[in-house]
Length: 236
Image 1: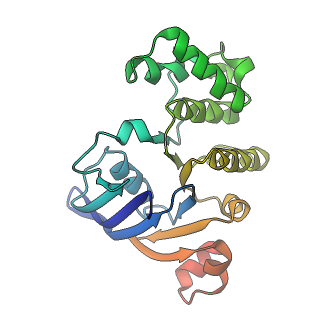
Image 2: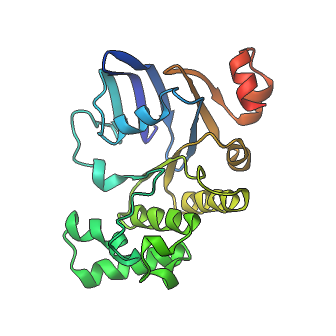
Protein backbone atom coordinates (compact mmCIF):
# COMPACT_ATOMS: atom_id res chain seq x y z
CA UNK A 1 0.00 0.00 0.00
CA UNK A 2 1.43 3.45 -0.93
CA UNK A 3 2.28 5.92 1.82
CA UNK A 4 1.04 8.80 -0.35
CA UNK A 5 -1.48 8.79 -3.20
CA UNK A 6 -2.42 11.67 -5.44
CA UNK A 7 -5.85 10.89 -6.84
CA UNK A 8 -7.51 12.76 -9.72
CA UNK A 9 -6.12 16.08 -8.54
CA UNK A 10 -7.29 19.26 -10.25
CA UNK A 11 -6.09 22.74 -9.35
CA UNK A 12 -7.08 26.10 -10.82
CA UNK A 13 -5.37 29.45 -10.27
CA UNK A 14 -7.37 32.51 -11.29
CA UNK A 15 -9.55 30.38 -13.59
CA UNK A 16 -6.49 28.84 -15.30
CA UNK A 17 -6.38 25.03 -15.08
CA UNK A 18 -2.91 24.23 -13.70
CA UNK A 19 -3.32 20.58 -12.66
CA UNK A 20 -5.60 18.31 -14.66
CA UNK A 21 -6.55 14.93 -13.22
CA UNK A 22 -3.11 14.18 -11.77
CA UNK A 23 -2.78 10.73 -10.20
CA UNK A 24 0.20 8.72 -8.97
CA UNK A 25 1.32 6.70 -5.95
CA UNK A 26 4.43 6.97 -3.79
CA UNK A 27 5.51 3.81 -2.01
CA UNK A 28 6.99 3.86 1.47
CA UNK A 29 10.77 4.43 1.46
CA UNK A 30 10.71 5.30 -2.24
CA UNK A 31 12.46 8.16 -4.01
CA UNK A 32 9.93 9.59 -6.47
CA UNK A 33 11.02 12.25 -8.95
CA UNK A 34 8.58 14.78 -10.41
CA UNK A 35 9.90 16.28 -13.64
CA UNK A 36 8.64 18.38 -16.52
CA UNK A 37 9.15 21.64 -18.38
CA UNK A 38 8.63 25.05 -16.79
CA UNK A 39 4.94 25.75 -16.24
CA UNK A 40 4.01 22.07 -16.16
CA UNK A 41 2.46 22.28 -12.67
CA UNK A 42 5.28 20.86 -10.53
CA UNK A 43 5.32 23.66 -7.95
CA UNK A 44 1.52 23.77 -7.85
CA UNK A 45 1.51 20.07 -7.05
CA UNK A 46 3.91 20.59 -4.12
CA UNK A 47 1.83 23.52 -2.85
CA UNK A 48 -1.30 21.37 -2.90
CA UNK A 49 0.39 18.58 -0.94
CA UNK A 50 1.62 20.95 1.80
CA UNK A 51 -1.64 22.93 1.97
CA UNK A 52 -0.38 26.20 0.51
CA UNK A 53 -2.97 25.84 -2.26
CA UNK A 54 -6.39 24.22 -2.17
CA UNK A 55 -7.07 21.89 -5.09
CA UNK A 56 -10.28 22.29 -7.06
CA UNK A 57 -11.01 18.58 -6.69
CA UNK A 58 -9.37 15.24 -6.04
CA UNK A 59 -7.67 13.61 -3.08
CA UNK A 60 -4.25 13.57 -1.42
CA UNK A 61 -4.15 10.43 0.71
CA UNK A 62 -1.38 10.01 3.29
CA UNK A 63 -1.40 6.86 5.43
CA UNK A 64 -5.03 6.31 4.44
CA UNK A 65 -6.08 9.83 5.52
CA UNK A 66 -7.32 12.41 3.04
CA UNK A 67 -5.07 15.40 3.78
CA UNK A 68 -7.64 17.73 2.25
CA UNK A 69 -10.04 16.80 5.04
CA UNK A 70 -7.73 15.79 7.89
CA UNK A 71 -4.58 17.89 8.24
CA UNK A 72 -3.62 16.55 11.68
CA UNK A 73 -0.54 14.68 10.44
CA UNK A 74 0.53 17.14 7.76
CA UNK A 75 3.12 19.23 9.60
CA UNK A 76 4.25 16.35 11.82
CA UNK A 77 4.84 13.72 9.15
CA UNK A 78 5.48 15.61 5.90
CA UNK A 79 8.42 18.00 5.64
CA UNK A 80 9.36 20.30 2.77
CA UNK A 81 12.64 21.88 1.68
CA UNK A 82 11.95 24.84 -0.58
CA UNK A 83 14.08 25.91 -3.52
CA UNK A 84 14.96 29.17 -1.73
CA UNK A 85 15.87 27.20 1.45
CA UNK A 86 13.63 29.44 3.62
CA UNK A 87 16.22 30.01 6.35
CA UNK A 88 15.72 32.93 8.72
CA UNK A 89 18.60 35.33 8.14
CA UNK A 90 18.55 36.69 11.70
CA UNK A 91 18.81 33.22 13.29
CA UNK A 92 21.89 31.05 13.62
CA UNK A 93 22.01 27.62 12.04
CA UNK A 94 21.06 25.82 15.24
CA UNK A 95 18.25 28.30 15.98
CA UNK A 96 16.87 27.77 12.48
CA UNK A 97 16.83 24.02 13.08
CA UNK A 98 15.30 24.19 16.56
CA UNK A 99 12.60 26.76 15.78
CA UNK A 100 9.90 24.30 14.69
CA UNK A 101 10.81 21.89 17.48
CA UNK A 102 10.24 24.61 20.07
CA UNK A 103 7.22 26.27 18.45
CA UNK A 104 5.32 23.30 17.02
CA UNK A 105 6.45 20.40 19.22
CA UNK A 106 6.78 22.65 22.31
CA UNK A 107 10.16 21.21 23.25
CA UNK A 108 12.41 22.72 25.86
CA UNK A 109 15.46 24.45 24.40
CA UNK A 110 17.94 21.86 25.72
CA UNK A 111 16.07 18.94 24.15
CA UNK A 112 15.59 20.82 20.86
CA UNK A 113 19.30 21.68 20.76
CA UNK A 114 20.23 18.04 21.34
CA UNK A 115 18.09 16.91 18.39
CA UNK A 116 19.34 19.76 16.21
CA UNK A 117 22.96 18.95 16.94
CA UNK A 118 22.36 15.30 16.06
CA UNK A 119 20.79 16.04 12.66
CA UNK A 120 23.40 18.69 11.88
CA UNK A 121 26.07 16.06 12.50
CA UNK A 122 24.31 13.77 10.01
CA UNK A 123 24.34 16.62 7.49
CA UNK A 124 28.03 17.33 8.26
CA UNK A 125 27.06 20.83 9.43
CA UNK A 126 27.56 20.59 13.21
CA UNK A 127 30.73 22.73 13.11
CA UNK A 128 28.73 25.54 11.47
CA UNK A 129 25.85 25.58 13.95
CA UNK A 130 26.65 29.03 15.34
CA UNK A 131 27.00 30.66 11.92
CA UNK A 132 24.27 32.65 10.17
CA UNK A 133 22.87 31.89 6.69
CA UNK A 134 24.85 34.74 5.09
CA UNK A 135 28.04 32.97 6.15
CA UNK A 136 27.14 29.74 4.36
CA UNK A 137 27.53 28.53 0.78
CA UNK A 138 24.53 27.43 -1.26
CA UNK A 139 25.24 23.78 -0.57
CA UNK A 140 25.59 24.42 3.15
CA UNK A 141 22.28 26.29 3.23
CA UNK A 142 20.68 23.34 1.49
CA UNK A 143 22.02 20.98 4.16
CA UNK A 144 20.74 23.21 6.97
CA UNK A 145 17.30 23.38 5.35
CA UNK A 146 17.26 19.58 5.11
CA UNK A 147 18.47 19.28 8.72
CA UNK A 148 15.64 21.54 9.87
CA UNK A 149 13.12 19.30 8.14
CA UNK A 150 14.82 16.10 9.33
CA UNK A 151 14.70 17.30 12.95
CA UNK A 152 10.89 17.02 12.87
CA UNK A 153 11.27 13.28 12.15
CA UNK A 154 9.00 13.26 9.08
CA UNK A 155 7.93 10.16 7.19
CA UNK A 156 7.99 12.00 3.85
CA UNK A 157 10.24 14.86 2.68
CA UNK A 158 9.41 17.00 -0.35
CA UNK A 159 12.42 18.56 -2.07
CA UNK A 160 11.70 21.46 -4.45
CA UNK A 161 14.50 21.81 -7.03
CA UNK A 162 17.27 20.87 -4.56
CA UNK A 163 20.10 21.41 -7.07
CA UNK A 164 18.83 24.51 -8.89
CA UNK A 165 21.43 26.94 -7.49
CA UNK A 166 24.33 24.49 -7.22
CA UNK A 167 27.30 23.63 -9.39
CA UNK A 168 27.66 20.07 -10.80
CA UNK A 169 29.95 18.87 -7.99
CA UNK A 170 27.62 20.12 -5.27
CA UNK A 171 24.63 18.71 -7.16
CA UNK A 172 26.26 15.28 -7.00
CA UNK A 173 26.72 15.73 -3.25
CA UNK A 174 23.02 16.56 -2.92
CA UNK A 175 22.29 13.35 -4.82
CA UNK A 176 24.37 11.46 -2.25
CA UNK A 177 22.48 13.26 0.51
CA UNK A 178 19.10 12.25 -0.95
CA UNK A 179 20.25 8.62 -1.01
CA UNK A 180 21.44 8.99 2.58
CA UNK A 181 18.05 10.33 3.69
CA UNK A 182 16.38 7.41 1.96
CA UNK A 183 18.62 5.02 3.90
CA UNK A 184 17.06 6.51 7.06
CA UNK A 185 13.75 5.07 5.76
CA UNK A 186 12.42 8.46 4.72
CA UNK A 187 10.25 8.62 1.63
CA UNK A 188 11.42 11.33 -0.78
CA UNK A 189 9.45 13.26 -3.39
CA UNK A 190 11.88 15.38 -5.39
CA UNK A 191 10.78 18.01 -7.90
CA UNK A 192 13.68 18.63 -10.26
CA UNK A 193 14.63 19.63 -13.79
CA UNK A 194 18.16 18.22 -13.30
CA UNK A 195 18.68 15.31 -15.70
CA UNK A 196 22.04 14.45 -14.15
CA UNK A 197 20.42 14.14 -10.73
CA UNK A 198 17.68 11.95 -12.22
CA UNK A 199 20.26 9.69 -13.86
CA UNK A 200 22.27 9.46 -10.65
CA UNK A 201 19.27 8.59 -8.47
CA UNK A 202 17.80 6.24 -11.11
CA UNK A 203 14.37 6.46 -9.46
CA UNK A 204 10.84 6.37 -10.82
CA UNK A 205 9.81 9.60 -12.52
CA UNK A 206 6.40 11.23 -12.87
CA UNK A 207 6.58 13.42 -15.98
CA UNK A 208 4.22 16.40 -15.95
CA UNK A 209 3.38 18.54 -18.95
CA UNK A 210 0.67 21.17 -19.20
CA UNK A 211 -0.68 20.04 -15.83
CA UNK A 212 -1.10 16.39 -16.80
CA UNK A 213 0.84 13.20 -16.07
CA UNK A 214 2.17 12.26 -19.48
CA UNK A 215 4.37 9.32 -18.46
CA UNK A 216 5.90 7.43 -15.54
CA UNK A 217 9.02 5.28 -15.39
CA UNK A 218 12.79 5.27 -15.06
CA UNK A 219 14.79 7.85 -16.99
CA UNK A 220 16.14 5.34 -19.52
CA UNK A 221 12.59 4.17 -20.25
CA UNK A 222 11.30 7.69 -20.80
CA UNK A 223 14.29 8.63 -22.95
CA UNK A 224 14.30 5.55 -25.15
CA UNK A 225 10.93 3.85 -25.15
CA UNK A 226 8.31 6.57 -25.46
CA UNK A 227 6.70 7.62 -28.71
CA UNK A 228 5.93 11.13 -27.42
CA UNK A 229 8.31 13.65 -29.01
CA UNK A 230 8.00 16.06 -26.07
CA UNK A 231 9.14 13.40 -23.61
CA UNK A 232 11.95 12.22 -25.88
CA UNK A 233 13.21 15.78 -26.29
CA UNK A 234 13.09 16.45 -22.55
CA UNK A 235 15.14 13.41 -21.58
CA UNK A 236 17.69 13.41 -24.39
